[in-house]
Length: 186
Image (cartoon, rainbow, N blue to C red; front, side, top):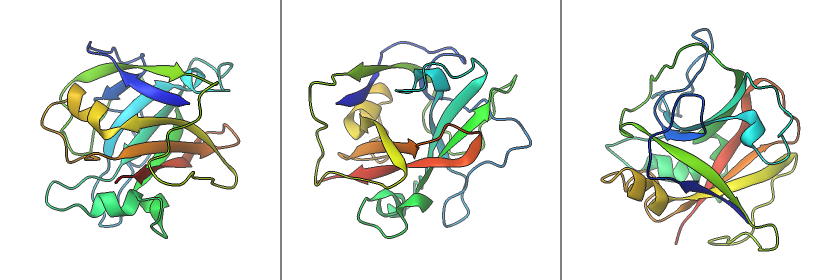
């Protein structure tokens, strides 16, 4: 089992973090949801933080984006593992580290929180429903909606009581379509 643990302390730009903006180059388009709204930048980590990518260059980052709309819960449907086009509700971008942060998505996660990876390979992943297998993708880790709410009180609507399961392409290449997050809830 691999899960993201949100620490109760501020994260600097070059640290694995939840919240804040992405270190995306200004020439890379900000990801958008099916309604053409800018996605929420959920987390950003150096690529070497990812399981099996510890030898990635220091200037390669991975940023995780999710659809979010304060006015409805369509974003929860778009990320559901049972939804036919679940890849439209989130996106993972592997990119070179920019010199400055930018944020074009909803500004609901105020500040940043350091994240660490709890990796217990002798324990199986705790799927909320059935195990998810995505051809050509590898499972990275999970993040609980409760962990987001605990770190940023008042943001229960991002994933409610669901768990996000992060999947990335088997190949680590610079890409604006490197993977996605699938959501399971009860």
